[in-house]
Length: 421
Image 1 (cartoon, helix red, strand yellow):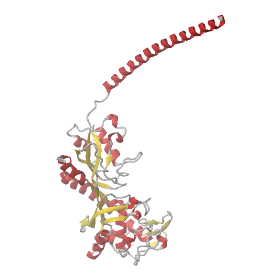
Image 2: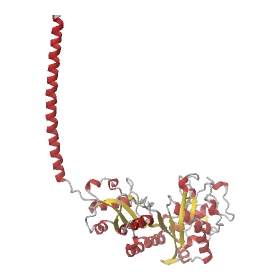
Image 3: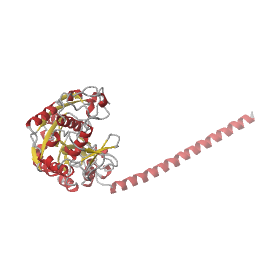
Image 4: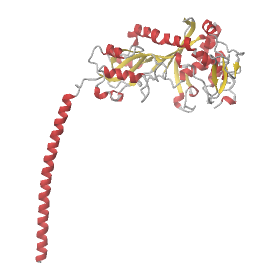
């Protein structure tokens, strides 16, 4: 009995001592936390005092143009020299993007209306982002920081939910080609297994092995060529086959016939009358579509060019929309430029709600854009073609494979088994 009482008393004392220690521990812990919290608040206040002021940001549509010759496309990509990376750097330096947001363009929700591939230009494109707009000279500051072949035309404030890609309902592209690209294929071209001069062009097979050598076409013959009306009409007719909704699985990569996204709608195609630049005749083609896939426009131009060049019946074109998989070459990127993205539905909505000032209108900058195109896009295309004869090299390469890889260019518009992938 005494033993039990002693044990009970000892247990009670132990519990009381534990409770006292626990209470003391809690008090000390509370004091420690409060002291640390006070220090942290003090540190935060000190940091806030040294940080840049928080300036209001607005969602905007920034209108730009560029020559893409020196860039690996429009869209920002780690380790790549792109239009967006240069533009974002200028936005940060000009104060249009805060220092805290300068580490990642996603923090300002930067998005482009149309993506352009390596070497492709744009007379007009739109980038949406949350931008600091307090400086009324921000456009001038950006242009002072940017190279002359990248220009900011202006910007408009938009709805907070504005997204340049999803609000864009269609895009207009332009492709420039020298008319000699439609010249009839030379059947007696001399091909050799070894180079005859240091100017000879090396034509390789798809696996990289050297196939043959050929002399480049006389530059005088290329620049003096003038297309006949009949040949021009056939090219215009060839391009008209692509208007409407078709399955373009053969005009891009990594898409099959049953992929729903292979179906694309081209609203309109206009083939302009030939023009003379630097003594060479050029043809401009405008393609207006809802959206275009990777390489789609270049493959469309190539199919039309080579159909005319090889005098293949145009019935070959509808066959390319069918399930048979073939390899269609890409026309040179040199002649391709984004003319403008179209925001018709967005602009109509802005007008309907009584806010037309937020409409995205490139016509306000028409004179500046035309001057830029002439100096930094058209002239550079013509100059590069004159110096390097890119289209001639492309056509000679096609001529070398016209009876093998591209044997579907024939007088019967028949796709042989060897061309089916």
